[in-house]
Amino acid sequence: MSSDGPVLDTLTDMTTVSVEHNSLSPREFMLARLAALIAVDAPPISYFANASAIQESGMTTEDIQGVMIAVAPVVGAPRVMSAGGHILRALGIAVAVAESEMDDESSLR
Image (spheres, rainbow, N blue to C red):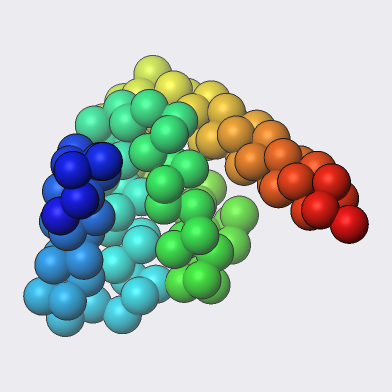
């Protein structure tokens, strides 16, 4: 663990261990993780942190909507609506990061 980011290092270690010690496929794992994010009303940065894993697992927009529909009777409409807003904000963060990386690459040329 580096002294530069002990919290981020801890979260990374926890995620790594949870991936290594489960019997789910990557897609099933991310479906469960997405349901948990919705259930705890996770902030946009939590969705952003999982965005690449969600994409790599092959989940589609329809899958995400399906999870939202599936958990709605349990967590409630306000929590699902909140998750929708958080996911949209996470997409905004992803776009901003991608644009920044493209700007950085352009300035190196």
